[in-house]
Length: 93
Image (cartoon, rainbow, N blue to C red; front, side, top):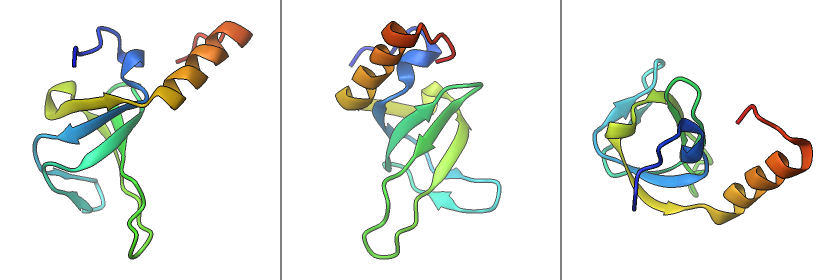
């Protein structure tokens, strides 16, 4: 898939991590983890889905675009963002 030119176009993409990552409190995320990009201010903010066993959900921020690989586009979130832009002329995202 073609990499987005603008930071805001990363929001809603489903990505795979290319290297192991760690949060500031020590939570580790292995390479190959599937995440959703939820924000792009500064660096990308990645959010994993909830674990079926324990319910933990990991969020990592300030991730570089070169550290992830795009898998697919989350059409539901992309459609909601474009609706907000048209309806309210929202320019923050």
